[in-house]
Image (tube, rainbow, N blue to C red):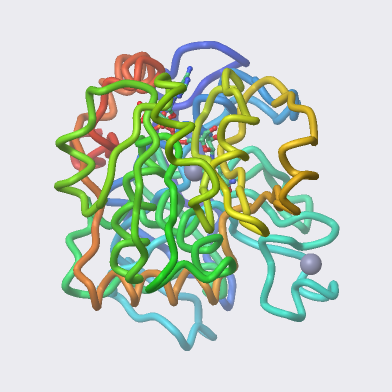
Length: 349
Ligand code: NAP
Ligand code: ZN
Ligand code: ZN
């Protein structure tokens, strides 16, 4: 076994504390990765606090925005070699044989993909532990290549925030001639703005306060709308092709956002609040609008997203911190007091 150290929550809602544990020795197709940086996703907070009621096992080492360097490879690994810059996102395995896995859609694996943390390995050998740690061992099929021109700290958030927004933007054809709304300018939202504008869409940030107006422009948004202003929302009615909802809270008047969509427009929820969203279907019924969801992206699509970001030089806006500061960082994420992603520097472990 390989000795690992990191930060874990020992039980639901407990603060994170230093934690020692073990990783498996590499099997034939495993890649051993020295973790250099790991982003803090709002999902980590939902998971550590058990806000979704998944009853995931503790101790839990969160973290699924992992960027690092290959330390060693198993004897049958063909895709990676020692020294490569690699990433690991939200899943480390899937059943590999269901109808969705066969279509390269492991994120929608029918029996369920294996989460990077808080899940049982498919052979039942161990509970997975995530990236707030110094080392990880992952099957090569679930390892991604990070383009050489992207610095590892700023690239780490692409592994969740990047792919979670890239996938619905691609699926619902964001591009030239399309007006795309990004609801919530946080970790996911700021990536959505950068990616959608690189795709050529007309991008509008829908934010709950005035505070981020200047930032939105710098990130590449063409317009900024404060969602608390009912009159401005009304003026923007029937004009959006697509809205990506990245908000982490259920405190949203969904009707006011559905009404922004054109006939046949689509609102996609990727934000996953602790409580249900409630709405009457009339705004959907009246204009044949669509309401959809989307979870991360497949491995193939994650590589496509990383290559797209490499080509367009897209990375995350980050604040690099020591793992010791993780609990403070969680409090700041909850207050939306981060522009726009915390990234843990594992050299300070
Ligand atoms: P984040 O950085 O905290 O950003 C969330 C944003 O939502 C905030 O910046 C804020 O934007 C807005 N917001 C927060 N509280 C609000 C409130 N009470 N009312 C209105 N707006 C509010 O979080 P994140 O890491 O981007 O994650 C966002 C959500 O996506 C989380 O629920 C997370 O679990 C989920 N997620 C889903 C997937 C998936 O695969 N579907 C993957 C990753 C994450 P403004 O200040 O601009 O309003
Ligand atoms: Zn995430
Ligand atoms: Zn499957």
